[in-house]
Length: 487
Image 1 (cartoon, helix red, strand yellow):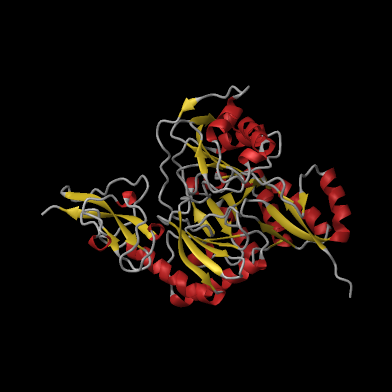
Image 2: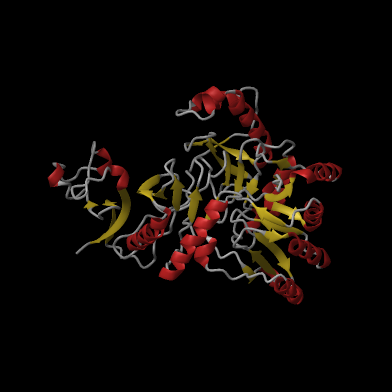
């Protein structure tokens, strides 16, 4: 029997937002080409698969409808944004619908490097998964910019705030500099930031406002993004997640139809591969319930199933996630304030508190950020060379370790957190370092007599330090804050 070759079609949705009418048109074209389901990528884009012999008809339909798309490639990554969070996961920022849309409209080219537009008050959309990461500041229409050069993990903080209207032009100029000087700025172990700055500044007159305060990352928590939820003016938003990452086209067409009927203008895709619809009226909830019933759509999955980042269209990652979620459920594991990523390929840009990374040998390493905030870039290796069957037990132990650090007297630092009003005025906060393998503590006040380190020695000043119990190196130590009360 002759094997039918399939094609993967990708459609970018700038900012993760699309009108109901435009989505319906894409769905109709995909259905006519033989697709029966749509999936969402971790950069808020759409994917669907068709047979090779349907490709010509699809290309003609896309051309007639002026829809940009790619087949079996990802040359133009989607511009992602936290627009989806506006009014539901945060409401305190100057960054509103109009600002997002104005910036999207100014992009008169398709970026070849990843662009993130993120409100710093939210944690639903990742901060640093792009190459150009624009993060809102306290000053209206001015953004922090953190640049992650392609194929590297180093972040460079641009020394000036970027004005909203300058963002698209800056991205084009910076992209041309990077791609035109690959030997300097693309997949390089070291980057000359001063040279990069000189090349951007040459011949360009961007609005400059010096960065005076460093960006403070918010503590991470992943909001529950499923089901009907009430928000402003008595309206509701609906979040829809699918365990197999596939949304039936017939279901989405009915969703678009009810949006058009009830004047819900836009739908949103999320980095967690889900759909979100805002502005649902109380009187229309019954109609939405009918659609969910007709397609047997479950909108109440467990929280520890929703906090995962996977590579796009990766069956191996999806099956491993299902296995681990089952083990988590059996253990009744708490995963609040944690999220997980599975990386089958290197340098995929996925961010999480805890990362499961496949090695060339087919085994898995477990890493986590030093403070368990997924927006941090400081990773620590927890376990190496594990089989898939051994991952669950190790991940459960790591989660238990994390909550142990949060217990009284052993607390992880929180970025930008306000002091507790109940804190004893006589308490002093000191930093100690704990080995994550054996839980041994290095306290500057006592030093380490076994290693010949005198009292009063800063941990960071010790050369070639090893744990006196398990001989772990400094990379296995986590900085934690501890309150010492005066007597």
